[in-house]
Length: 305
Image (cartoon, rainbow, N blue to C red; front, side, top):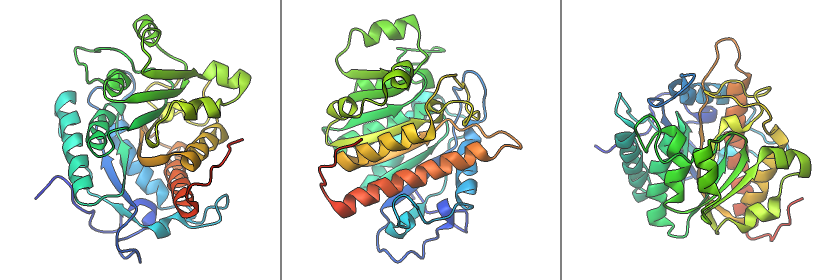
């Protein structure tokens, strides 16, 4: 038996079971409840379950897209076993799981974190299938440290590891160390768009697109949002993006590039406040809808505004 199994019972994203009318689901949702290297507020291991729970209380009709994205097929997989393995072994486990998923015919993997370190494994698996892969990172933190807490696979190093594998575009950044700033100034493999500039000048959509290849993986650290609407993260940073900033960017990318997978990470649920959980679930579903819309319309040559 491999790492990947289908979830049994009714605890499925959106409340959508395996009785879908499509033969092969477009989206395979893999929960990864891991937060071993969290350096401030813990709890991200509870994020995947909170997202799925919230998703079961969403309306499945998308008023923006005028469709029900779930009809393209969503399968929810058994959470990846994480126990207490260190970050390097966890990256290897995620890579193996995603490789297995792709070999079994998964069309678009959707990972729910868990801490951000898991993304490295996903990228390594997808790079084998999409050699020209690029990554769009929505995040408050640069995550460009060479090593942190004696590990190069710490969540604070995930973008550095990604940049070693493929081209990376960062959006929403507003927290980094001197080491990270110096590295970003010395590399041409990473384009970084800071939140302070986006607030002043608007989202530079065409510039962001120009840095992405045709095949794109999107990694969303929920702290990209302002903590006024997303307080449930391990390290909330003031001055973040809003809902329509993020969804407008995601729609633009989906209309102009081939999104081959995505993840949503770093939700640390807060007792008594389910709004952030619901935001995360809605974001996952919204991006699914954008991907479906683009596939239905084909290459629209859309100009984002």
